[in-house]
Length: 582
Image: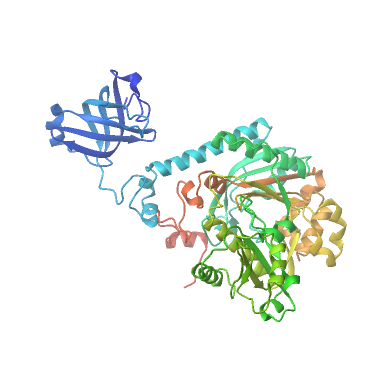
């Protein structure tokens, strides 16, 4: 055999034993007639000691970084111990070795503080995966996967696979499409989620389903998006919203306990979508800190300040303890909100000084009495700083949400080791798209309205008021999952399709299989899909899901290691009946 032990398991208890190890050479250090080598495998690092007797062989077969090496020898106590690694009290006095494979000099150092940039490490991802920090990320991913699966198994869920080659239904994000050779000019789509299949499984009587499944969306990328990503996808029958929330809150508590040793004694807080938008400016609030948005619109209008008088919304936040901000710091914040990504014309501030006086950037229009009203509305105290934005309602609320997060970051209030989960509920069922002059589903077209709002589906004037039987789970300002109670009656599903502008013929063409299934006894059902990559990233203290995927794509959606996507040859194009547009 190549090894009797791994490079991470030998301890003082094995001193004197004859062992064999195999792995990769991390470093080679020569000290006179003796040579020290750090040998690495997936499990850890062990120091090897090559004595003077092996020098002739080392001269003939010099060792280098990342060589694959097999050694045998005796476990000995180290004279100079390394308390930073578990094997740091021992070393192997090598009696024989064999180079199993040589290696070129790596393009970057394979260690935690590597000198390789992102693109270089992604091009040589198979080398980057040898680094301990990346290995730890993938180990965490595996542990989260195993923990979630074990929990779901105890609750009676079945792991059932669903197809990857399905029909394209262009709702929501863009599909990746796959041409069919045997059906010329026709295409499969890769699933954005197994949504309709898991609903069909409920019709089939498999009342608790799950998958840890790949999904595909052809959309613009950012730190928490990849063209292919993984979901913990779940569905349950004969349940209402409370059943879903209780089950998956328990699952997350189980995962946190196993992975992070964190116990949540209390139920996760809940917040309506309306409150999330009013007090945090977005539907995925970071509740690790307060700094809620305060609506100042009615307080400030009619005072002759044109910016406020013409604004749809004037909104403020209170930054605790920041009244001593300098002009330079305030100018920097002003420039920050003027960036194209934020899109505001400027920033107004009020300093609530420690002595109780109030000083603002708009003193010409608002005296201290008026400013005191602002302070009261924002719940500011002496020593605080009030920051105010004004403009079109949607843009201003979104901009203030971003400014709140930025201030939380600058003030050290977004601790990555603190975890604050939150359920957001009572979403709108529809949203109106001005450019297309039509209503679209905020979640997806299979989401049920709240029972008390079902009758409003026949009244177009009430579409904006209909609430969905839907819910998101948010962690530290990131949505890590979402779901809903589904429509399970054919007539209501047809009303939903009609509300989205589909004709009966179009709805039947796209979703006839589901509408037909509803005629054969569909139970009440609902579910949730958790973003597995995002959950792992948050548990690992990272903002990027890419760090927790073995072979991710770059920000352009390319696999730079494989150089994909790539052209295919003319023979394949001819077989697929595809003519490229020049």
